[in-house]
Amino acid sequence: MKERLRKLTSDLMLIPGLSGHEDRVRRAITKELGKLGLAAKTDRLGNLFATIEGDPKLPSVMLFAHMDQLGFVVRRIEANGLIRVERLGGVPERALASQSVLLCVGEGHDVAGIIANKSHHATTPEEKYKVLPYAEIFIDAGFASADAVLAAGINIGTPVVYEPKVLALADGRIAGTSVDDRAACAVVIEVARALLQAKKKPTTHILFSVLEEFNLQGAVTAARKLAPDIAIQLDLILATDTPDMATRGDVKLGAGPAMSLYSFHGRGTLNGTIPHPALVSLFSSTANKEGLTLQRSAHVGALTDSSYVQLLHKGIAAIDLGFPCRYTHSSLEVCDPADLTGLTQLLVAGITGIDQTFSLDRDRYT
Image (cartoon, rainbow, N blue to C red):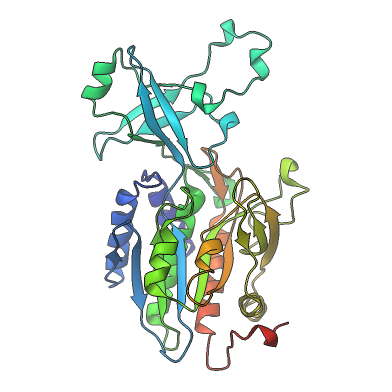
């Protein structure tokens, strides 16, 4: 399982899929689901979903992760061939200078470029400590004129992502682009593999959503259609085991999957998720039974699709589970496949553990 997760995560990381432009990722995941015998459907937004039938008397589950990644779109092409961009999603400006990018024209036609960094020999002392706002940065793809840029298929609105890459680190860890949330997509596929073989389980909808990095729009639309009783969202959980994150929590890379007990964005979007107590109880007890370490997280500054999904219909019992991740939203994020394996085991055991005795009555847990 661990090697399957490592390979699938790595394969998905190498596929560009800017928010709103996830089609290549969706097609790749569709093929993987086809290998499992699952016929997936796509809605008009591009969400991908499939249903694993189970006991109709049990509460239904929606297990989901987002396919998209953050990046840029082209907003202006200079006469000399340099390219200006608009930011899409929470791109950290201080991590941009000198990064390599990919202008996504189409499979087989994508164009490499770099985010320019002023020559050191001409940088003033004041400029050495200045972070350029994204509106001032430009991409150099080697073109000498605007006409050459257009001839290459690049135009206003062309998606731009960090150059897709995967790096193998020590102890089997992975670094690269879009670990957020391709690692979770790989986990959903692996969970589906196991659920298809399970004799007892609730009906489970698996969803690969779009537009998460663009105001959390995709999963809400899909959840309206699927109308689950339970929503389990998979995403990164901030690892806090580096010196710059030590005061933010106690989540360690390689120490197992994690559960969010509280999230709140607080930076322009006043929303977040406090998980349903029945699901906290379910996955806590499951971890104990399975001998798994389940790390706990509570943080401000991040937001997931569950924050809006939980508000649909009569209310959907929601929880955020995930894997520890370092250096989030940068061009080189880091995860540990061992955590993905643990997360998969937790989910399979937890979901198949939903039986006739399971209740979503909050008063049983509080």
